[in-house]
Image (cartoon, rainbow, N blue to C red; front, side, top):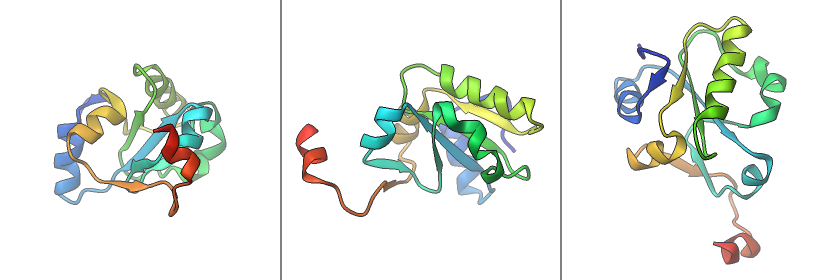
Length: 123
């Protein structure tokens, strides 16, 4: 079980290594969502301002961890509060978001099977 509202990537990694189920919800701004090359493996990707349209996709029977690729952690904190308001209990915010997730060596997958040349040139 994950303890506390703010969780570290280390705690998430340990939870995953034990095989305990959790759902990662990856938040992004609309522009970043369209240009992302990778996402956390198994994560539900949501544009920050559309979370309430995705509530049916979020289970109640496992910890929910929000991570954001946006600077700061405000969007993750707001999203977690939305779930708490709608009756979820086991809701957390990943400290330092997607950057911490990557630094911890946690798994990522490509967002799409093909990366367009335009996206590559912008990198």
